[in-house]
Image (cartoon, rainbow, N blue to C red; front, top):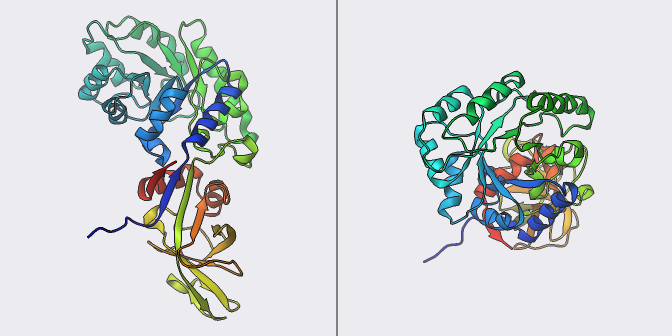
Length: 363
């Protein structure tokens, strides 16, 4: 006897992914693309997405060594950059054997490289400059001496690279912060030989002056806007993930009757209520409020009451539908940014959560 998996599906449109890479090429034609596939490709599936991007981009970016090793085990060659670098000697040896590039951002990593005997195949290193994010990286004034030290190590390949990360490039009102970060990066690397990388998705869209040698698109590859107050459609980005699940019941709830846990929503009139087979156990945000849009049978209705683990309720109004019809929770209409805003989170979190829990289907 066989059973179907959980009903929620994350439909992954690989042609939309290719389109979005093309947008990056158009926006940054003189830069190479390091496509970010960390966190299981933002919930879209590390290996399937990386197979596509390895033919469309110039390299892949992962968070940690195990993610890079997974790409190599899947048979993917080419440049893979580990943005957190190695955390211990075992990871350094594994990254070296797999031919991964490493970001170096703290003194222990420098010391580890100094002790390491790489032999005839030294490692490609990206030196992280903290220009204002204050997460990881070295202070700008440390960079010249660190650069000379690294380039004198047998374990480090010629051609050191320099990288920083913008903290506020998504906010049009905070461009002065990004201005300062760009200036600090340029001052820190002035006169040093090597390729540079500054721009994430938001920087690609707003800071053509800082595209440099490499850009690092992330969320825009997956068809969501990185910019506050701007939609993906306005940026000509196509949603890669469509989250959907079936309508499993329709019932009439009378005026004055509450819906769902806690009775936080009460019908103010006789209401056609649809029950959909998805909940926070599938990655849909529990805190999506009543009024969040959902498309049922191609028609817009709204969430009512609290989202449960495996189900949620919608006000169907006069929508022409029946049990078994599909509901779409994001991926075009509604856009993932709209759902995220209502749930007081960001599209990144929604995509990662649903992609890891719903059943992925590749188109």
